[in-house]
Length: 413
Image (tube, rainbow, N blue to C red; front, side):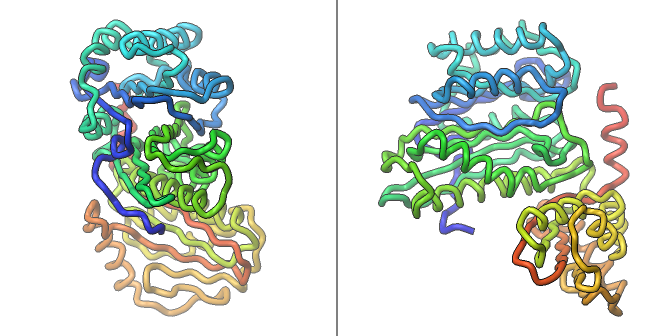
């Protein structure tokens, strides 16, 4: 944790940012489905995107823009259609979207970044999108966080938003963010959309490095179902409106800014895992004693992503053997006689040996966490020590319930 404070405002908490969200008719449900984030001044941009070979048109578009231009003014996001695997026509839709919103804002098209979420193989209904843009731009405001956060949702049950403030150079600096994600959640990058705004002045190269590291410790450490999406997009804008001195290196001020950025990303990442489709609780896997941090993160991800572990948690079954098995197949070398496993306050294994424990009490612990869902007391904590190495890492996931199958069995029908 940093010395930052939680503040209201979400994506519009940072100075010089506005947002909007409305229903453009892109979703059959009639729910909000079109969001816009706007910087009143030029902002530098950094991005992290899906590693899938099957990508949405918006992903390729954003990558191309960020390779040649880092000065961005707006992010447009539609929900309902992923516009992935839609070929040349889908790419043209993306280009036309950027041009249309740029005309409404009075900025160059290349100053607009794009994101889409929804059904793969479905193009954006462009007539509906373009018809909604005048109202969308007109409704931009400092109070637009709630509408924007809801407009990017698909199967999410709740909007995900956070804003933090700290002091850098005797001036307040703010970072805000929103995210969506509930299913198809797995690292490389985790399946989600997230947009972050910041009013610090920071060099473009350093901002990208900070975001990449933050993603590694947050969005790349969550998993719901082991499926990576075609549309994963994390975009962070920084417009310098806090009027702090420019941060060009990872000095004290740079470390403070990166810590706050990471905290925002971790909050949003955990919110995604907590809202996993059909989930009843959040699972936090803490791994220590690994040879290095990367190894610890890998073991944590493997345990959090194990279908058997997730099913046991849903069944309120403290079956620690599944945790041990997942750690053993993670591809990280350790001595099993050093293995230590703890579930909440229950020590289940130590020095590679099973220990007697109150199985009913451990089951009640899991049950209590499910009953505390969305009350910030829904986190099942699994602690695993591999040895005496210095590597530590954390991953987040959720349990695997019957409802996950129900939700995804008829997703397009």
